[in-house]
Image 1 (tube, helix red, strand yellow):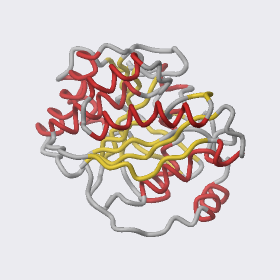
Image 2 (image 1 turned 60 degrees about the vertical axis):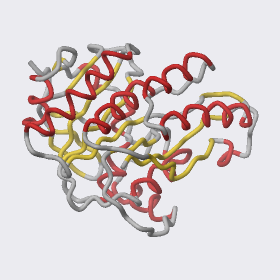
Image 3 (image 1 turned 60 degrees about the horizontal axis):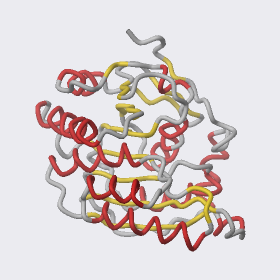
Length: 275
């Protein structure tokens, strides 16, 4: 059973502004140039404070044709340690300063039904910022949609691939192909010199560009890449491929040093689309 049905904003005023007006103003001040929008199967978005990574996420979302999207399967890493390793919040409402977003209960339950790993759980989501930070950005670009919030606390490759395949199978069973966006939330290298962070991040991004989730995990482990959300990205890639994805595109990449001017210790941020 869910412990609560309304998930209130936990990091408004910290990672992003606390008021709707301030959120809209900040995103508008980034002056995201309108480009060609395309329907996509999945994406990877960063989740740091908006002043550092918000523009990267917004630029990425601005390239997505969201007209047909009814549900976003929002997948992030577990930073808090609460809850179960493969956690879905299966019912209820998430609130942000921009309003309420309802959980797609039907799709969440279908995913649960078809997976040996996922469990319904709220504790993993209660204070986790990696999903919440994406919501106001999504709300800025689309008025109405539902979500399936998923948090990962495992690095087991086979389990992560299995969860992705279960997500795709549930989408197929409910005949939702084309109406669901898979969104994996992850920052890249943390707190290393900019040149070193960029080099490591390119190794990880090369594997994502090849839609190679096993290669991604191998690079993360071999080169000690502190990419916090590689687990949700692995699951997202497995799901996207099962839904027919065949290519990826890096929309933009930056580091915190581009904002602060300090390249001695940065965090990397990338926006990627999966077609």
